[in-house]
Length: 77
Image (tube, rainbow, N blue to C red; front, side):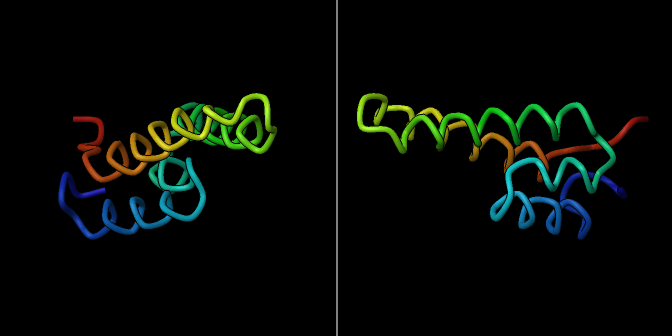
């Protein structure tokens, strides 16, 4: 990637909008991608239950964090 604000980061952020962690995967950050995908998926799955409905809030926070993280990624110097 060329750096923050590059076209690649914009594409990665858009990918994260649809599938959390996909943007990090495109950027080559496998562990980060796995973390965001699993965390957001588990939070949204728990929110689907009536008992743990409040988990959608945490899922939304992590989802937004994944999008911002992909957009602000500067790469390895």
